[in-house]
Amino acid sequence: MANHLRHQIRDYVAGTLLGSLTTTGSRVHQTPIYPLATESLPGLAIFVETEDAEYVTQSGTNREILRALSLIIEGTVALSATILNNLDLISKEVEEAMAGNRTINSLARNSYLQNTEIRMEPEAHIPVGIVRLTYLVEYANFETASDAVA
Image 1 (tube, rainbow, N blue to C red):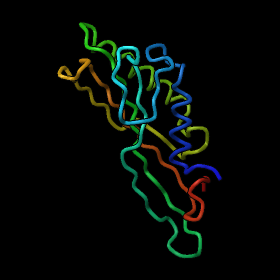
Image 2: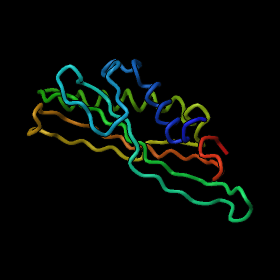
Image 3: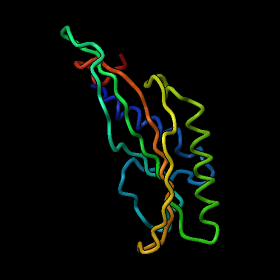
Image 4: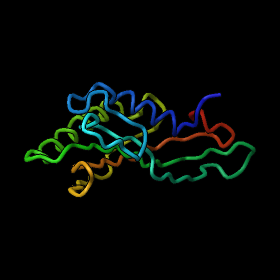
């Protein structure tokens, strides 16, 4: 049995970003709980925060569901004098990698950058800066097959 499309989308994005960005290399994790250790920085965390669903067809035995997924890609870097430059570089690399495949290997109908947030965590046990890129990913499935594209 295949995984939910949400899982497949997250896996594909993580696989695309894993090792392909010069800033983060292989330090890509699929969890909102990023392991803050010096050897894990700079790195990426990829996870889902929310998903809206709308039934496109209201009748029948197998209704189509249109989904809007908020896919979060967070880049984390150690606090330094060049922290903003480093966060901007991660943003640039992620945005360019994501723009290269808007349908996420045909799993989605569309995806685009919806929001970017930058914050500092100077009080963390390892002081860091974080850039959070939120991508809206639109995809569809039939309600009896959450693992297959509609």
